[in-house]
Each structure stands twice: as C-alpha cells, then as structure tokens.
Image (cartoon, rainbow, N blue to C red; front, side, top):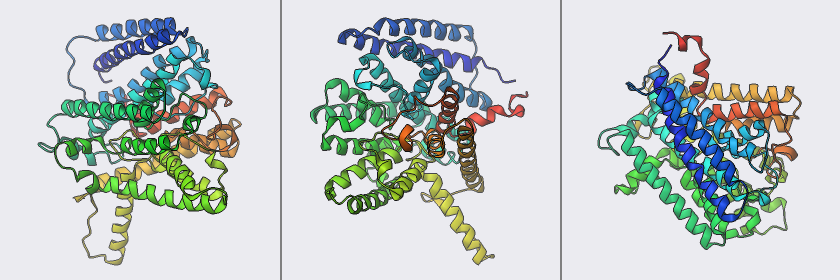
Length: 482
C-alpha cells in the first residue's frame, strides 16, 4: 500500500486554493446585486476548512512523489475538485440536484463543456463566472499535468514529450519554472482574448467569461445560444483564432518567446492539426454552400470554420445546429470530436500526435512487409520513435475505443436512443461538449438524461481528460500491493 500522506497533503493545498478562488464569484454576485454571494462564502469556508484540515493532518516529512503516488494524485485531484466545486451549483440559485451539480462541475473542470443548466441568460452572474473559472483552471491544470506528470507516467505515448519539455537548456531547466512560464503565457492570451471580445462588442462580464472558456478550449457560455447570441461575425472569427491558440502546445510558445519563432511552424503536431482543420473546413464549406443554395459562400466559410474548430479542439461552442446540415457534415463532426488538438495544450480528444505516430508505425510495417531484410525506423518530429512508444500509442487507441464502446452500450442499455447514447459517450470521452441529435445536440442540453447516465458520463469525462490509463491503473489489484 503506497503512502497516501503526500497525496492528501497536495489535495488539501489545492482545495484551499479553490476555496480562495470561490471568493471571486462571491464578489461579482455582490456587485451585481445577485443573491448567491452568501452561498459562495459558505462554500468557500467549508472548502477551506476541509482543505486546511487535510493539509495539516498529513503534514510532516513528505518525500518526493513516487510513481504510484503520482497516479493516485493525478486522478484524485480532479475528483476532489469536482466534489467541492459542485457545492455552489446545488446550494445556490440554480438549485441543481447533487448529481446535476457534480456533472456540471466535472464537465467544467475537465473542460468538457456539457451542461445541465437551462436558462443561462437569467442565471446569476456568480454562477456564470464560477463555470468559466472552473474551465479556465481545468485548462491550465491539464497543461501542467501534460508536461510534468503524464510524460513521467508514460501515458499513451506522452513520454515523447518528456525530452522536449525537460531537456537541459532546451526550454527551462526545471518543471516548476516551465509551469510558471506557461501560466504567465496562459494569462496573457486570456487577457488578450478579453480585450478583443470587449472591443468587438461584448460586455465586460461576457468578455471575461468567454475569454476564459475560449482559451481553455472548454466552451461554457453565459448565453443559451452561445456565440450566436451576439450576432457579430467578427466575434466568431476572433474566437476561432483563440481556440486554435489554446489547442497548440504551450511549451512551443515559450520557445517562440526565447527567439525561436519558427518552432510552431516546424512542429509536426501543429502542422498536422492545422492541415486537418483546413481540410475539414474546406470540405464542410463546399458541402454547406452547395446544399444550402441561399447561403453566401463567406457565411458558409464562417459557420464551418467556427464550428469545426470548436468541435475539433474540444471547445464545444456552437452558433448553429450543425447536426442538421446533413449526413456528410454529421460524419465529419463526429470524426473531429475524436481527433482533438495538440498534446501539451488545453484541447481534448485523442490528440493529433497519436494519429501521426500510428500512421508512421503503419507505414513502417508495410515497408517491412515489402522488404523483410530492410531496416526501417519510425520517426516523429525528426526523432526516432521507440517500440515502447509505438506500443503505448496503439494501446491507448484500443483502450479509448473500447471504453467509448462500453460507455455507449451501457447508455443504450439504460434507455438512451442510439444517436444520444453514441454521441454522448463520444463527447464525454473526447471532452467536447455538445453531442448530436435533438436531446444533447448543439441546440439541446444534458438535463433530460437520467441520473445514472450523468454519473456514467462524468466518469467518461474523467477517463478522457486523464488519458484513460491514469484512472484504469487504479483498479488493478497489483497496483495497491506493497
């Protein structure tokens, strides 16, 4: 049995920080005259009390985290945050059941963007800000996890990025320094998004909330109609740009700031992501233009650009019911859900680099079949890919599809129709947000789903966000043996 004191200590510290962050929506509620500010103060006090208690109870000599402790910490942090982040949703004016509140909090902290709240236009400002804050915190949390923890755990090929992130004199010498620099870049991009949205017509509050959920590629909005409520094409183009910025590796931004401005364009993962986006946008634009003859080409381009980028990056904003565009469009959007953005970014999904490694491995195997005596190596970003990495990536693909299929089958067994079950499972595992169909589609909401489905989807969000292995390994009996 691993020593859990370091895990409890870190969870206590993070809960204490969460409690302090709850004061922000309390202040906003008070300034707007909403009634939820005492609720946020109460939740903050309770969370702080438990967080400090956990930290004090586990204080003392805390050795450096071992491998098993790192696995436990990575999984428990997200669960503990969701448990306490749900409190304002169930105690505040939204008066959600705890099941709905936990679903909303887990969707927020994992930057999924699926929601059960109906009537966002009339929801208290503090609740709206709290949703945005959860997604913003989840975005920076997954970046730091992806560059510091997942490579160490060798999750799904993420060990490819351990050398890039921590090699001496390449970026910064230590993980803490990298994390600090990335947080600074993250804040800068968020502030830039706030200023851009405000100048393009959003109110100050809407600009702040949407900037946080755009840069984190998360998707919560302050309006039921999402970005369509603002009726401003320039806002959609600006949001498309910031969603792309959020889905690129933040470590590469640090290299760019150090003078290597070509690093983003030379990175295979970035080029692959932009290429897939361009092909999908071009195909969808032509499809929409020719199937909806009344729609001007520029409007078709704007609609497809915004919605395709939103789905592929896992943001989940929607400006139209794209699931009504026809079978071809639905198939493209369904595939984009799984692809995702770049590793080391806020985006979700399987990640582009895994598709690239899988393709390179497959091509190498074909060459070996044709020339059995030849020597062929798998390369990625100019570096050789070991058999261990290739096996890790293929294992990730298998487990991802397996978990998705099992989740979809269980959702179907509890009464969901085929489209709702399959798209809900896909959007949870890929952390996208909206599904397909009249219930959970872009114009729908997850509130009609039964409680059992919401708990299952919450588990699916956690699995997808933490790259599956991190969670599943905890269910192996051998993991807990001394």
